Length: 328
Image (cartoon, rainbow, N blue to C red; front, side):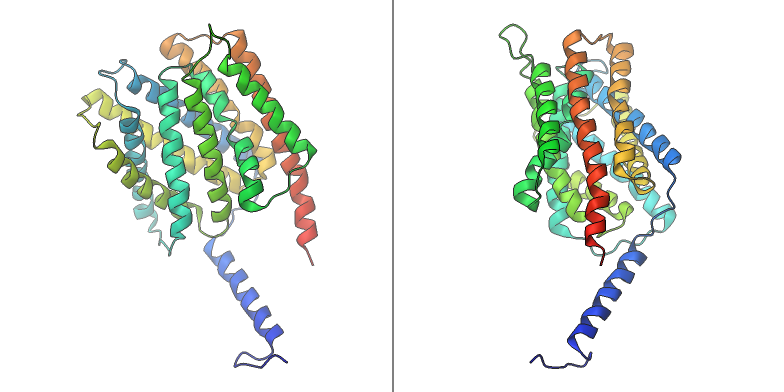
């Protein structure tokens, strides 16, 4: 027989603990009311900012704004100025930081820093449209990694979506001796690592408030990026300092828009709007560097986006089923 403690019957204690945890969770994260049109606008605005950061990274990594900066220095500027922007918001809002899940934050930020560094390196050598399209593979890699790391089961639809997206990536890699783009492998590696970052984000979801997650992400990212950049750092020009500040600030704005957009609508609804990043990246690359996407880029991008869209649609169909199964 189970012994009774000060809390009464074991079942009562468990009920009280569950209720207390639920109330604590609700108090920690108050979700805004659903607003799908506003959510779509926020996600679209986030894509404008994200595409702009890749354009700035390309300008900084080439000689468009002065001597080319190392990708490590570009990612350092991204985290440094994003941290400044988010810290300013925390101070203005008088936001109180709670005790964080350190292991999850460190894992998530390490993957995010490495992924964004590889992404910035890739856009120096290949068109923004190619790099952006390949980056859309990160949910596919996240799905694949969730099998061993989260114990998730993958059905035929999700496997099919992953296969379609990977075929598009192979097309963008141009695997022929005359047209193969080795630098595209950097974007592919970035997508894989950011897919691993999604695993940590899933584990963090619901445990901490979004602003706290953003603050710790950029604080830890700034520390990692600072340690990594020291061997290659050199003084940027005034124009490059301005571009680095704009890059970090735009990334902070993109994160804020994305988090708030996701909080106001289902992920399956907002996911297609995130694909606008490819449109804006292509436009920025054309007006900034005169790059015109060829038919291989267009075909590969359409195939990757088709696979990602099927995956988002399937996730949207599966989520209500899972939630219904969890109800008592």
